[in-house]
Length: 305
Ligand code: HEM
Image (cartoon, rainbow, N blue to C red):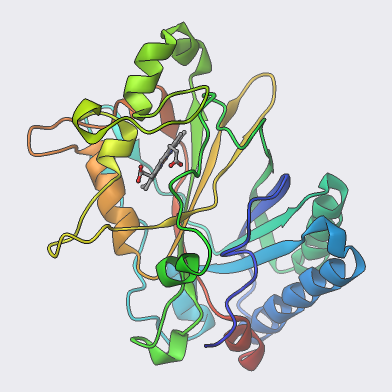
């Protein structure tokens, strides 16, 4: 299998820098070449600081892809699914390039981000930069452990990486990002029992509620979906918290071998079930951005550089 980019299935890290760019230069050959150079930057820091568990992802926006690699289209490439129901929405903020930089050292993430920016700065405009961190024992800022039911070991690759059904894009991954902003004041007014009901797991020790005890509006109920054959629909979440004293939230990141699982889950959260029972977590957090990308294999990026 063509080698997937290291950051897609990487184990959780302590720190991350996320860079979102729009490309302002139509010299596509130069951009393709620079994307390959970004992989070299990741590799350089990984070799120099192997203890920092450096990993990265270079992902190309769904509409920019068509300009950058004309005639070579991943089978399921699609724009971010724009959804709106009552006061719940998934806004789209178009973005050409998404660079995920992760390591167990904040200084290394910063150094890599600086090198990437220096390389691209003449061709791009920086739309957003988010610094993320591991919070306590892998918790979201709501206080709940995030990532427990993620696929593990080699199963991550089955879930997140495109296989032989799309031969030109083997080793790639469909990425969806959303920056959520939490209303922690409102959330923290809830009793822990109510918070647990909304997540569908206990807070302190992260134990899943039995199926029969889970509310229909629980986040883990709305996102545990099955396909027509009764098989679980899965994504690999690589989300991390961000924030300061004024604004707090989650940088949500989904990696999958198809864009469909994310779209189905988001729809189940926002529109709810057949009775309109939606994900109550959305009463306490709001998506402020959203974008869809494809992260091709290392081989693909180097081949077309
Ligand atoms: C602010 C936004 C979000 C927060 C704070 C959040 C938090 C959590 C937490 C605490 C869990 C339980 C532990 C775990 O298994 O990871 C969870 C599970 C999960 N979340 Fe989210 N999540 C958010 C957004 C989303 C979105 C947008 C999706 C997909 C569209 C999603 C998909 C899932 C899935 C698939 C699970 C595992 C469900 C299971 O099998 O039990 N989450 N999330």
